[in-house]
Length: 302
Image (cartoon, rainbow, N blue to C red; front, side, top):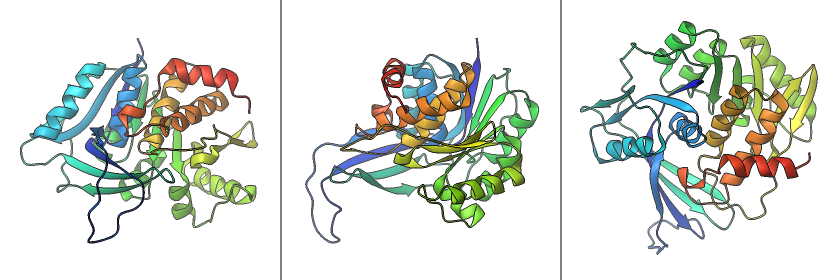
């Protein structure tokens, strides 16, 4: 069976539904929120396990309540957590997310302890695919170099030294619009394809891999057979919460690559998975079923 390893950040998310952004020094009453594990690579691992893939997660949590809850969530969905380390000198990261129902935006306040990194280098598997989010650069680089034949995907959400350092080691650099703009110093516009092409070429020239630039509700951009392509996505009229939509996209993208989908179709279905997730509150709560994504894909003609 194909084996996937996801390496990076694990956190605990507390999502609070609001109708408007709070005014400082006021009191606001809200309906009950949602709590669950989060983090880019952790969310991707959870999705892949949910979709039936043999998935392991490499990361670190604290020896605390939130760390235990994250581990229990992984166990319930079947994720292998043999390589999820627990530290008694580190507090599990927490994210407090304000999900604004009036416009679908979310504001995230992150509480993170001092940096603590995974120490283990003894891994008993031969992965089909490796997905990294850049939060564990050393062990990520180690495994990417150890298994050069694996399908490798980097979730480059923002411009951090650890993420940039991993860019040359992956086959698929899947970066956000923000990352592409900050790295290339090019202001991107979906209405001006030249800007996307210039940023894409800069990234390819520097890192020599397949580049995908994600564009949120506008889909994603890449080149296929030398032709620039914007792969569109579903139009969500009343988005609820965009938390983890990008993580879900990256997990889905890894799934479809592992299952032999061509790049265009992998992006098309991954766009759909991310779009469907914004219709529900929370990260893990919003992950669509694989069957649902495939059904939408059959009906959605771009």
